[in-house]
Each structure stands twice: as C-alpha cells, then as structure tokens.
Length: 485
Image (tube, rainbow, N blue to C red; front, side, top):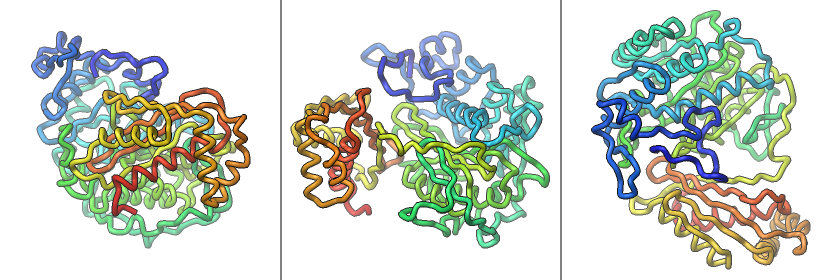
C-alpha cells in the first residue's frame, strides 16, 4: 500500500469508484496526522512506508484511521474481533451500487428513493452499514448473534450520529432454528444461464452442469434470513461476508496477515459453501422480498457449485464479479427472483481475453513463487519468451505465430472435436503473435488462483488463447495438485 500509483496498462485491482482505486492509502501522511498510527509505520529498504500485516493492532489502527480520515467515521473493535480492510469492503459496496442502478430488473426500491440493505452477520465492525450509509445514504439492518458483536456494532453506529438513524442492529433469535431444505418448494422452469457478466433467461440449465440439491445439507447454525427478516419487510439487497472456513485451524493457517476474527465470524461446518447454500435456500422462501441477494465467495470452485444450485432453485438472474485487492481474490455472487426487464447477451458469445483456474492441494513448502517459476519454465519449454516479475507475481509471455500454430496442430492430433474445429479455422497466415500475462493470487493456504490475460487489443483467431491456457493448467495441476481431482 503506501502512495504508489497504478501503472498505465496495469489491470485494475478494485472498483473504479472506490476511493482507493488510483490512490492507495498514504501511510506517511496518515502517520503525520494520527499519532496513534505512527508507531506502526516503518520504512523498507526502498524507502516505502509499510506496516506489519501480521500485527492485529496495526491493521486495526489502519482501519480506524482510514474510516476517520476518508469517511468521517468513528470506529473501534475489541481485541480478537474480525478487522475489515476498508478498500476491499468498499469494492463490495460499489458493486451493489452497480446492481441497483442496472436495468436488468425493475428499479423499484424497497423504501421510496432510499436503498435499503440487510447485512448478514454485520459483526462488531459493522463495516458494510457504516460505509453504505456514509457513502451513499443507504438504510441498513445489520444482524448478528453474539453479545460482543451486537454491543460493538451498536457502539459504532451510535458513535456516528449523522448516520445512526439509517442503521438498525438486529439480534438473531437463537430459539428460531434455521429452515430445513426439505421445506423448500423448488419452482422449476425458471432457470438462467450464468456468465462472467450476467445470466440469460432460458428454459433449463445446460446439460453439462451437474445439480447439487444437497449442497446446503448439514448447516445447523443460527437463522440467516428466514426467521430474522420480519413479515412484510422488503429490501433492495442483502450482503454477506460469510465464514470462509470449516475449522478455526484452517482459518489460522495464513501467517502473512492478522485480521483477527472469532469462531462465529470465521468458521461454519461445511464452510462458506454450506453457509451460502442456506442463504440460497432462504431466498427461495423469501423470493421477491429482496431485489438482489448477494454474498462474497472465497473459493472459485465453490462459486461454480453455488451457481449450479441457483439454476436448480429457479433464480431468474445471476451475476458474478471479482474483487481483487493486492494479491487476494474474492468473488461476488448475486441473484434475483424478479422477472428480468431485458435480455442480456452472454459474454461467451465473444472470445474471452481472460481465463482463470484454481490450483489446489499445494504443500506447505510450495509457494506462489514456485508456481510462477513453473509457469515461466513451461513457456520456455515451448519456445516462447517470458519475463517473470516476482514483485507483482506475474509472468509476461510472447508466443510467435508459428508457435501458436504448432500448439494447435498438436491439439488437433488428440482428436478432440473442439480442437479440430479450432485448427480448421486457424490458417497460419491468419495467426498473430500473442502476448499474454499469467498472474498468481493467494486464496487460502494451499490454494492459488492462476489467471491469464491477453495483452494486445487485436482479436486473435478464436480458441488459440484458450488452448494454450488449458495446456498450462494441465501442467501446473499435474505438478502441484497431485491427488486432487
């Protein structure tokens, strides 16, 4: 972080309306204005100001001063509670702003001209209601179950009287058990087709997509939406930063950060997939009580399964997005049961210029840098030129037209129908040199996200990039994901 500007041509790492999109927090300036933050700032060998991200007190104080300096908010949490990063949480808020302003579904707000949201598990930090109310004037209900979370969420709301009337903190009634998936009445025939951008309404999900009707089985925690939302209440959206982990041991495996977090905030039997699946099941019962249902997702593999569940239960619209902050990736998942007001052209109609896959099962001694070196070695082995940038965890690659053509010919010999079609449409005189970038992002311990991005604007013959990236995926999974299917 610090005062470094985003380089020209570098892929954005946040929402363009995020206050920190082009202006990361300046630690030197903040230290000069806040004496309580100054002790946590030190200078590395290159002269850049830094903090120790493994120090909970440092990350908490950074969040406090950012909320005060940039948003005019008074804020604090006790030791051990989950400490949010302000830039990352702002991305989520602005994405919901995009959903509410889109014309995919009717623009009928739940509370007149003011958007009203429901924050599932608002926590002691109450970060989403505070940001949504201060940035956009939204109203919020924030729910939680623990006494500490409810007490401090209330304190954080009351410490900001200019927005306190916009936020209600609501206790979840633990005597009201979470609904059972057996009680749901699925409504078939209202499926959608999900892409990276949106979903097109269709009569049934694609044949290749497996259904996961038992995804939410096993969740026996507190009520999430059903039993917490009051009769007759309507909202424009709900949002959630779910418990990502199945055990507290798993949650504590990343030694590079210290954001705190209690068992209730971090852990759920079945992890995030079980928790979000229960939100989906609750949404089937509540249906049009919300214009949009949304949640953060930590693993891309879970995202695909959850989208499958949404097709199964009859969502009319599904949208996804990607939140990138530093070397951390998260995804946003949203859906609605309202009738679509217009038909969306699926993004797969056009050739994609970015692809990604999850690399799971890495051993403790294997790092993101090891994967980067393997990426570089792979491209060297096929004759391409490549340049590894260890600071930004990326490899830039250039392949000649002849190298691309050779790869396609090899694929054709495998007899795959899609590959044959690609080769038939790729005369060598139509192929251009290809420049691409492969980046690696940390997910959770043992799991990385590998992303490929075409760097040139010219449209390549369809399929070349996909075939090459698929080969890279097979090589990396063979080396790092042994035993993972």
